[in-house]
Length: 154
Image 1 (cartoon, one colour):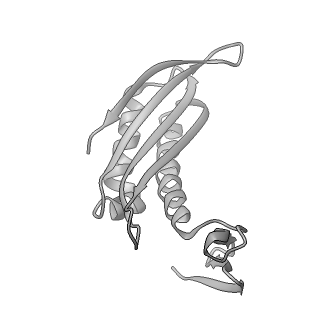
Image 2 (tube, one colour):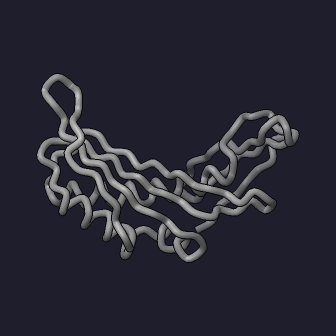
Image 3 (cartoon, helix red, strand yellow):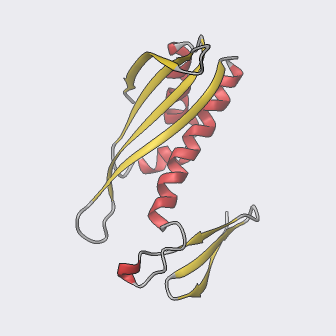
């Protein structure tokens, strides 16, 4: 894998990956930036959430779960002092659909955490990552009802 970052001036950059996609990188005005792009550490958080999200939704679809809405939130704590590394994270999976089985959700999270997600496997060696889930039943009126919630322990 190869990636490049090109300086655009001040504290603004453009990052490009082998896939051909690019992303703007920026910094807060308090450190000389123009607040014009994602912060590099935000990309780590998005990468972690995105990696496991792709695993979990793929597994749930293979199990023929009727998913209507799905998201993964990464809540990450950082050290107070520089270099302000990540110190712990909570990944929360929100699954909404019709008749979504808790056992399927837990197994999908387990497979992502223990077998498929390289971001989770790598970062879990550096700081603890807690895994939580919420399963909602989508109702006819467009609302949703919480059916199950829980934690997955690695």
